[in-house]
Length: 286
Image (cartoon, rainbow, N blue to C red):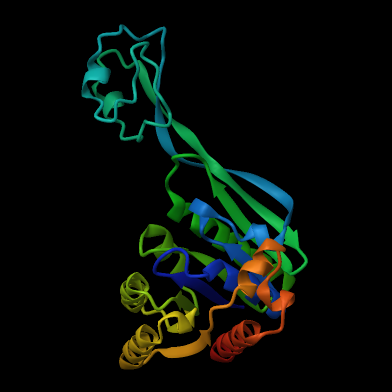
């Protein structure tokens, strides 16, 4: 199978809306929502969960009350103020650094593994979807991204699917690096704003560092055509293909309100450009 991940240097570029449309256009694929910190692809794909798994990662401190002498050393040295005056650890404030565990004079503190979230294997009318949800204030999202990607690969192998299409996280951090490692293609969705242009360059730099091929789609290109031309010039200088120029249209919002990918809601210019974008992706992967 071939794996493509859709990224954006910043949030709000329309990445997830485009991924939902790709789910409608592509055949023989499994979908993955790698944006585990703020997963929302399921809102458009309307999955029915078939498997629900716990995700355990990281550690939290736990004080054994029977052994604690309440000397106060852990409270004094905890820089996160995670231990209250009753010597109970707040699991939200605890960063799992283990410092209190190492300095407790009576070994009353243990480090226990933390339930960080859940991951799901679901079925949609577009095919299988692997997605996840981190708990409040939980971290290690890069590890969870790797887990859902691995599950999607197993599904693709068992079912003989041709594509893995991933909705990646925004930015350039650990979850992004975990999303792009070993993929066949990165599709970057950007917009012609100053922040969009700046973050596009950053995420292209990350992809180049890991030697991952890139193509770019400009969303809402007509809100500032001068900036769109600058994006095109930059991409051409980096020998990166501009796969689509999607215009701004309120029909996208109307489709979201109806809970539909825009390519199913209306056959207008936006839908035609997204279809052109998928043809460019499929042609590159072939």
